[in-house]
Length: 291
Image (tube, rainbow, N blue to C red; front, side, top):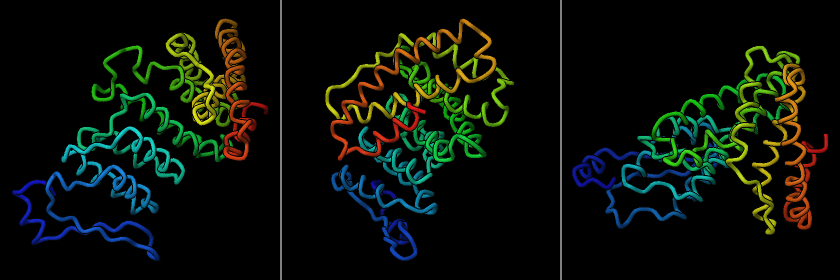
């Protein structure tokens, strides 16, 4: 769109992108543009909000690739909005594919907030299924694929202490999915020692993050999306037979879980004061924390 050498080709052979459903479809014709006429951040966000169907989301990689080639990568705010929307619609697999093609799409996971948001979107599938059945296995597989991608240089933060794959808030969501799958598929037997591995990593990396309690309710509300899966992951892991049988790991998890519960409860109290605005977050937190 922005290359003069391609202008005539685009005019001679128009490319039309359809976004929406059969009943309400929007057609976008790609046309030659000057870089100064590129879409604003709000216009890019509007296009993302139009993504609804499976067919729509198949356009994600070409869309991001075009933006990246034009040096118009998504802003951090829009990136998080994209990932959250994908999770809400069950389309997180398309985001994962875009991450796998980061050199084309520019969708990098060096920012821990992006990684946490994508993992939350992935685990949402398992949570909606009650952490039982094939969706748990699918979510765990997607989470493992994300971890594999995080090991590549383009997704590695240059500061080791800020690298997403080293952070307990990220490891905690992996632990949650692995422990849930172990409880569901193997009746609590850690057959491949995966729960033990994640639990050990969580304990050893715990000092890398400070889990503060924000005084502002909007920040506390979003912080719960990180805190609750982490707490729930430790709680589920403590139900696994091999973890119960190993005092060092069990005691390490119990101490962190019980201490961390205070931070979760404090965030919940901050948010609970504004129940009308955030009823869903309050009820969701209590459903996992007070089982």
